[in-house]
Image: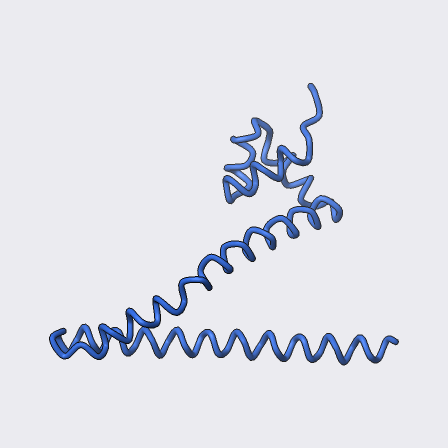
Length: 122
């Protein structure tokens, strides 16, 4: 049996989203996929690929943040809408703003910790 390439397994993992699905797509056993994922070099490639895809998706969504915010605000401010609809828009806007703020704050703190750690190692 020919050895399957890492690229084939990586592609299957990314497109299937699960070990079972990747094994089916690549026509290999789940054990083979698990074994490859237990290899630190392979795992680093997989994590990097997933990170790249996540960054691309995030960038795409970020491009639409302003429009989404404007839409929620318009629904919230439109007195023609039922109170429940306006309240739901308010709630959604507040929840998403708080999540964004929290995530931004966590990222800022991590960056500060990493910078401080880097200074300590220098």
